[in-house]
Image (cartoon, rainbow, N blue to C red; front, top):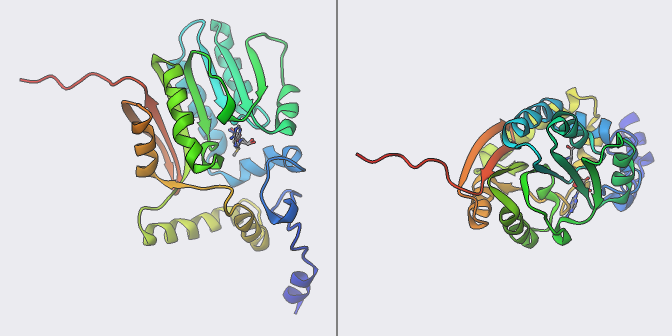
Length: 258
Ligand SMILES: C[S@@+](CC[C@H](N)C(=O)[O-])C[C@H]1O[C@@H](n2cnc3c(N)ncnc32)[C@H](O)[C@@H]1O
């Protein structure tokens, strides 16, 4: 009875997806009230969110040369971008955070420490003119780009990367079989409950992401990277459907014959 009353009180045009976020018309957006609640929401929605930031900062430290350049594509409120800059600025690496949402960039810009080596740029990736770079990070961003636009972005990005540079790509992926997808989805539901979301919030978030977050399988993402000209791909992270790779524009050492 109480359940039925709660359901009848729900606002289906602006459902609650957690952390006080009510996507307008029930369709997920990074605008509206999302930027204000984003840091808390994403940290409890993405497994190992902070640990993956730690990992990426350590990887960036290996990859970026002195006076290099690093992009954080889809930087949101700039949490990772700022951490990258703190680690890399001492050796003169420029870090550029890019996001298409104005509310995200406004919040990210509040973190600016006053160094010319950290910048935030508001632009859709589809229109961004990439400068030469040593590293680009795409942490759960490409999955929100329309499917036909992903290959052109990756190709332009690969051309902008220095031969010894890299792309770090994290994506939510689809299971390669129905059984895998079903098992993983069920376990992710439990993760979100443990993170403090209630059943309605979990269901409404999922509904809101329909047609907005379009995941591919791991092998479809590999194919996209290969077709964009990336020559070597190393797997660095997997937790259920959350997957991270490093893609290199030039191949590693070939096995010696004989
Ligand atoms: C899941 S969030 C990324 C999280 C962030 N990388 C982090 O470490 O917290 C996705 C971000 O990508 C941005 N975004 C989505 N599509 C984009 C596009 N086509 N061009 C630029 N930014 C985009 C969104 O505005 C959002 O801030």
